[in-house]
Amino acid sequence: MANQLESLVESIKSKVRALKKSKNNNKPYIKMDKSSSVKVEIRSRKARRLIDKTLKAADRPGKRTLS
Image: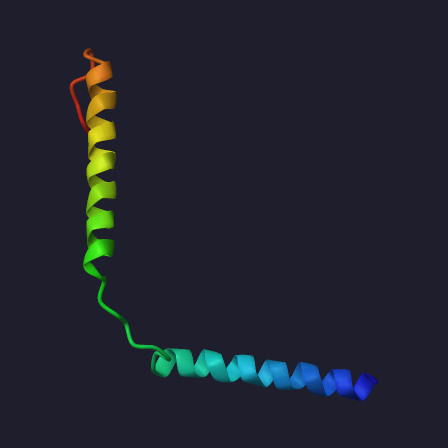
């Protein structure tokens, strides 16, 4: 039983080492472009953050900065 467990641990270690080495050399996947719906979602999140920031600044008329 101990030998089986030991060999399993060694095989896992070797696979992890191999993955670490291959990660530095080449990527195992191809980077995909963002779809148009994802781009719209990102743009709307940024706009929402800007609107929230502007409204927060407008709630405090004594402070003049937006940053």
